[in-house]
Image (cartoon, rainbow, N blue to C red; front, top):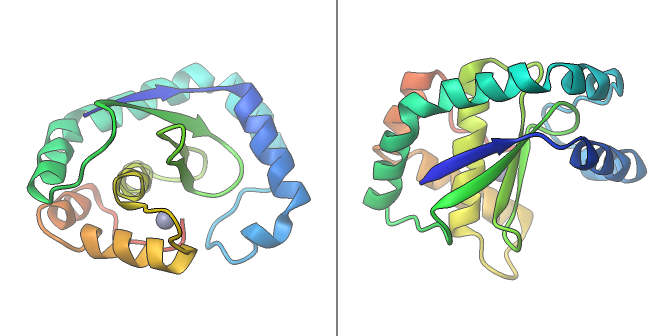
Length: 163
Ligand SMILES: [Zn+2]
């Protein structure tokens, strides 16, 4: 497993437009950044943020790969693209494009890495026809299993449901 962290102003803006045109879809999430100034902030800090993302992920990459193998969690491809964004929800995933996105603003490193792992589990476990709650429950149950739970403890994040 390799994560390719990327930044895209196009993605950031299109997600933002989706969010402000569908605010109800975001109202139940535990943490949402609505302030459009974070788009600007994220664009200015894009290089710094990508370095931050890569630097924090690298030390746990092989442990997460091993944990996925142990738990028989299979990703469709060896390299997963992760968009790093600054507004909106904490993270998301797209099974069709085999990509995830994770917000880097206003979160500490442990929360960021926890969100990356959370979205990767979604990517590996989501089945057609599954609803939101079911998907979160399945993801949480994997995050509570060793060795994934040990990694989350080590990086300072807890299994979380509302991403
Ligand atoms: Zn989730």
